[in-house]
Image (tube, rainbow, N blue to C red; front, side, top):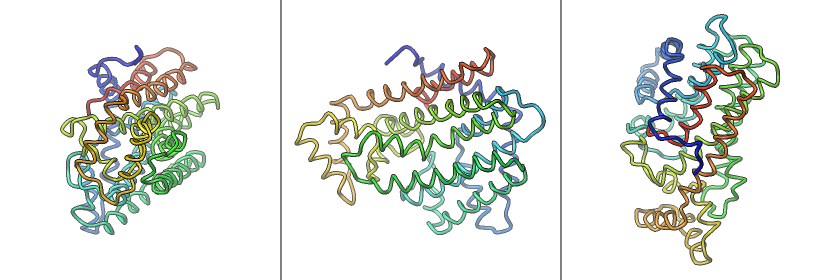
Length: 337
């Protein structure tokens, strides 16, 4: 891989640098989220508390705050409110995802659907979205309202598109990129573009920040999918092989299918057609992943989007804020948590 990718400690440092840059605002975001999710319905309170206690990087909130700072927003705390809004959209999608995927763990803790059931989890996810839209309406900026509401629609479309192609060993790489663009990159892009909108930047700079977020999101998701066949659960905070067991065709599988011989292709098709896959199936696929260096090839693909993400910020003058955001792009490839 190219020289753009630093050692893990430097990549993780970029994430911590961004947290430190907006630490005061991030604390206010946490307070806002807790305040907005208060409910007189005991079960909702229990479920939202459990979900929030499972932690998370708050990366999308950080991107909103960091982008607003780079853009020069300093008029109040709309960035705090909208960073909370972006984070609530993300949290709602996680609750819904866990139901769709029948997940039992999220960041090393039992998922809400495992504890309280699918129906309650879906409705609680809807509750989070409704709270999010309240924040958007209170903010009153129609441009941002349109941006974030359309992004919510994109995320839902991405989920449906992924379900539509579930179990397809011969999934086109183009279709995979479309799925992760909708499911993941769209919210990253909306977070960074929101920062630009808050500062009323010219269109070129808005587009630059949106591009930065989009390509960062693509790199982040590709790396996430690659790590599913590589990372240790204690480091990564999720079940290893989770995507495989759920029948999701992600980039590592696409790469081995592209390179596999006829017999291996047929094997992959049969494995992914199965209603349930077991540890033996995973071991055999893992052998192909290693044979064709699919994790490494996936990270090379992600590195392309890292470079595009970094380059998108070239339009902004040199500053500490810009350097931190550009360095953050490497976090998507080299993170250890």
